[in-house]
Amino acid sequence: MVVSTSPVATRVLIVDDDDAVRRGLEFALDVAGFAVETFASGEALLARAPPRGRLCMLIDERLPGISGLETLRQVRARHGMIPAVLVTTHPPLSLREAAAAAHAPILEKPLIADQVIEAINAQLDS
Figure 1 (spheres, one colour):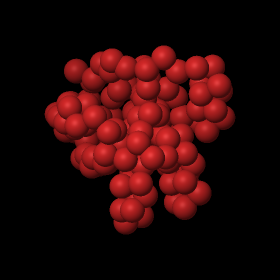
Figure 2: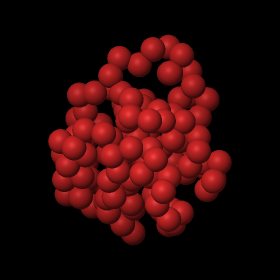
Figure 3: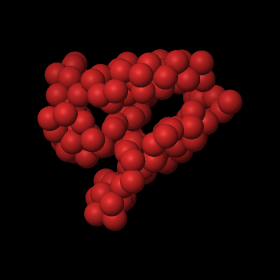
Figure 4: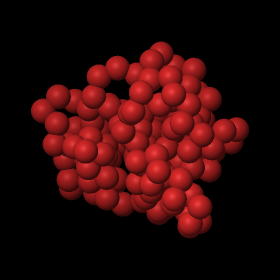
């Protein structure tokens, strides 16, 4: 398994409406050395205190309420350019283009823990 490349615990904010996905990602990222916070919606993430420290967001595109991409836009409008990875199944070209413009790679479900960790580390190193 790939591990966090950061000497200081990096926080990962997971936003996914599927409880099983959130728990699975939380476990895998915790084992890899990340500090993890989970949220069931974009609105729940936006309602939290402003993010601080070294962090990356892992956001499902298909959320109840506002989309993952819109969540990303709103967080960045409030708090600056926070690294992020979008997650979805079968992303259309328009989403791929919008994610690329937002400097947020897309990972397709089903997720593989090592790929998620590598994508997070790549975002943190860019």
